[in-house]
Length: 336
Image 1 (cartoon, rainbow, N blue to C red):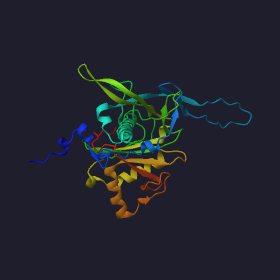
Image 2 (image 1 turned 30 degrees about the vertical axis):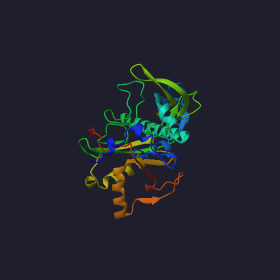
Image 3 (image 1 turned 90 degrees about the horizontal axis):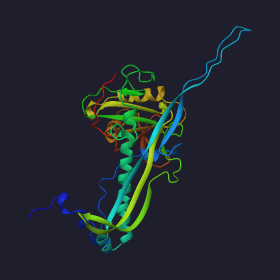
Image 4 (image 1 turned 180 degrees about the vertical axis):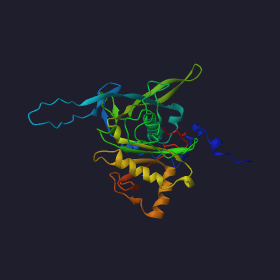
């Protein structure tokens, strides 16, 4: 008799009927991801229901030098406006009553189901913060990938470039197997999350809808224990100098060299302002390269100097935060 593979050994219902020592057998959480962006993200109420509007300075008043006794002109601050949208993320957990009733520990079983929905929520929101776009669906907010996309071939630190995006550096990789490093200052006047002005939760809302009737197939109905999840969230970039992207990095470790570290330092010194710490969110593949660099040159430091007590790397003052959500198969964008 042949052994069943993992994809056919248990279906969902069968797995949730397994019992050992009077308790249901929890499944292996093999799809859990590590995405510290949500740990670091500061969230504040927006000034609108599903949007946040503000203005940024584009020029400061300039003093003049005059001859004694001469008059002088007035000067003023100039601004431009921006608007960031908020998306409504929703999900639902339905547990058939018959499956629920046979569980030896009903509350633990239901809590386990809800926990996995929360994990999926975190992954979905993180993916959207990076790669989300409103091009096809206006109800979605634009993620960082859309806002910082085209590398500047001459001077990424020039905010007035007409064809490239500000603070996007190019590592000259090609094809559809490249990756990016995101340098971000998390602060309420830099980069932060937003929720509706009248939303008291500022996070995932979980509502127990109790036992309900639901259509199982065609017109047949069954009873289910239902939990509803909702998170109204968006992102706002108050200061465009709070983010830099190094993109078109070849995903093959053998193709990486120290020039990527040079761009990290250039971005740190020429883009960012203020005392807020800079986090470098990197694909897990990049961490392999940084560990190799640390072993060879000792220029990457391993410590636990952070508010969460999580072991991490840093390059100089920049904290490295590896993320599963960052792809290593991004399509390269030609620098202009």
